[in-house]
Image (cartoon, each protein chain N blue to C red):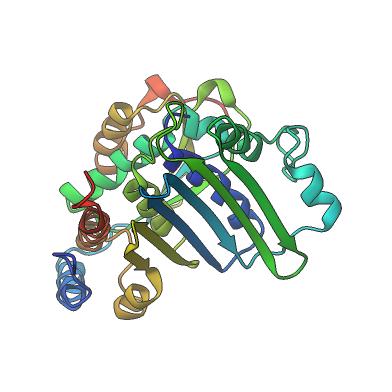
Length: 122
Length: 184
């Protein structure tokens, strides 16, 4: 009955996480906001968010906060995400499929280069 | 929407907007009674009777960015099309309970879908909220509770830490699979 991953594993996970934090100095916090209103969800926003979380997990990216919000009021461009790197101005992206999300993670969040092709005016 | 898990993700935003600190999501599949029950319970600000009566109307919403809220009417219509029912109960200052039930075998019933992703999204996005997901199949339960996990992680390690994300994803998916084994 008990799942393979149990709460006992969590202590070890926490220690590992703290260890990695010490090794990798935090290079300014990054915030990613996913529009998760009715239209966003219907357009695939959950898969967009899943791709973002998968990338964080697989590429061991730290210092990223992922959150969601209701509609941005720009329904035709859903799914929409906003990326804020440190104290730089926020960048709003539209039509962010899972694939586009992976590209934004690689080029903008990790590489520091805005993916102009998907930038929209918010 | 193609999955009930997406409807849940959608209507839970109402609980978040209502300032809930505790949100419990229940999904109960019962193959002997042929019913699928879903509920979302929160301790948000609640609604008065007039608002509850109007909330299933597509032209009522508390949002300010757009005037039409479709989440609840869509879910209600989906249930009623599948020999089911929809109920919303709310008390001002106490919270809201949304319940919905479907005929499990109904040909038009959407699949429950990827509840694991829905729960992970919510827990990660709103770490300050105490989340509980109670999933059962024919009385076998898996309960996910974010509070003990948050307590164990403390303030230094966020849910978005890569190791924690891996843990959460696997913990939720193995838990869900553990109650499904003898039905599918």
